[in-house]
Length: 407
Image (cartoon, helix red, strand yellow):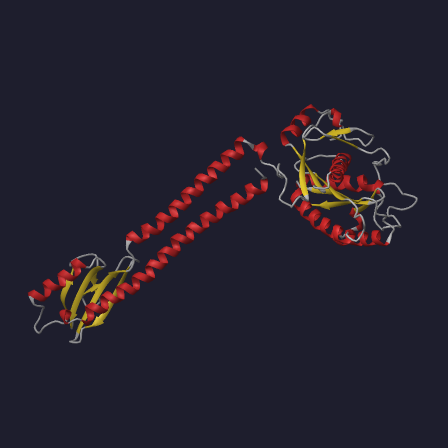
């Protein structure tokens, strides 16, 4: 499972929890508004009927009292009802009870102690006042909203537990890159660099590195990359007068400090090698390509010449996915620029990243990038190649490697 996928799943679970809360609150608010409208209709019907208009005398007739009792009993939302004529309470149901409290003039008044109930009051037209406590939110409706929210929270909790257990049991399967080719219309692939052993020592003197499918890719011997301990004062300067980019031999001297600086912050670094086979960098087309490379990577301090027809670029705080996106966009631009040539040159981009490795030498990263570009140029169907380090193999190698071995 990709680390980015784990992060996306975690974010999705958080969204489910938040959405469940909105479902609960939104459901209660919706039913409350609906209940208010319904309660108003119930009270309007009560206050407009002759049934509740008191007849003359000190109180209500027995027949009228029975009819009012039936109204309270039959309507489940009508929880209490009272009628007052002048300063005398002539009808109250249920009475005595929690809905009635002593008023300022000693006459019992209808009150509500629950937020789910609403008190409605109106004049009867004969100096009488009718009051009703009506439920505006049925507990069953609260349970309905809470039930939906509970199911969502329960499912998300189970999923979160499964995800946590998976991460705890199989940490080696959480990685920063995909093991399968990316869906990039045949333009990019990721190759596993599986075997970290002494036959794959990171040197540029002709050693071979083993790829995941058993193939071997040789490292050319015609260029010696110089990795001094301190930056020298070169005769010709750090920058090439032809392109304005740094000379190839200084890749390691710029890359090493960048890797050291990124290690404490667990930041990723990507090294890209771009080649347009046979293109002369000092030609008019080569000048256009240089301008394109500079526009893409911005800083001349991290752009280098590479061989006679290529470039290298260091991308700070960049993981393999971001590097692949940049490489794909750059590949399209380079292809468009060179499309008029007959035949068009082979264009390849090799990518190596620091990934999860806390300490790694610039020579190691450059070796991986060199092998990636060699693989990219070998296969026109996958002109962009990035290496993925196997966490388990790398851990085994680290345990077996001597302290002096340049990782």
